[in-house]
Image 1 (spheres, rainbow, N blue to C red):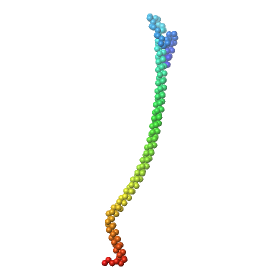
Image 2: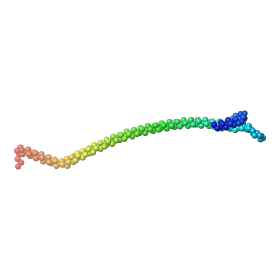
Image 3: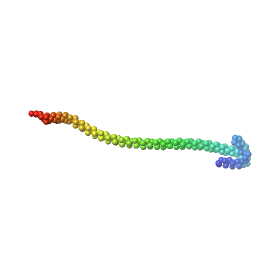
Image 4: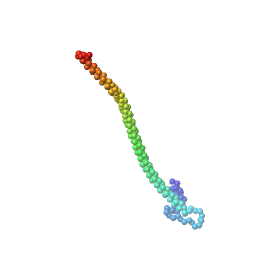
Length: 168
């Protein structure tokens, strides 16, 4: 990465003996200005870049662990979502089958109900006819009884006449 390239360039520029290890104190500033030369205090910059590189590497490792953890969580989420979808599909299929079965049962019941209503209509017509016959018998019962009695009397008289009786 770019920080490693910068560190390598700084180490090349400054003498390796001047590069300080992390945790060493920074060299004090010179008291008087001198001619321009490579600064002995440049080790602090090298140390700072090395610290930045270390921080970047630890942050990168932490991000990798977080990424793996996130991927595991996402995998679990996908599995649970897939299971939920499959369960919902199975429930939909089951309910569709129940609806079809119920519709079939409903149509059979409606057909039976239509047949029963037709049968009830026929029985109702028969009941009306029987009721009319019964009403006729009740209405003309007395008249028929009197006509029968008169007929029986006429038959008795006819028998008597045929037997030789005289009704004068």
